[in-house]
Image (cartoon, rainbow, N blue to C red; front, side, top):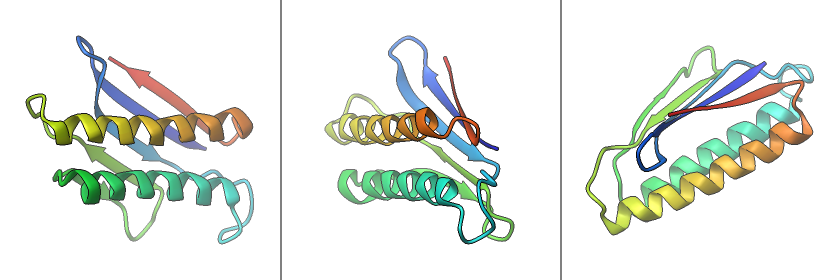
Length: 113
């Protein structure tokens, strides 16, 4: 099962980090559309923030075993780049929640403040 954990700064609901771990196992390796969807949305969202907002995110991933991606958003003042990054990340999370709504037996989405 894939677990998506989102940590928000409690006083302003700002996204601090997103961690995605596990495997959907909805199909054999290489044919797992749930895993592919989660990976595409997450990597696309992170790449959009880096490219469009010019923010340096702290990204960790397990290149060998797969099944792990974590991103931490730097603590910035209320800059325009940071606001844009939050919007892009909220869009990414919205897409991940949509995948969970359709394929909840393969992934779980959790938020903490």
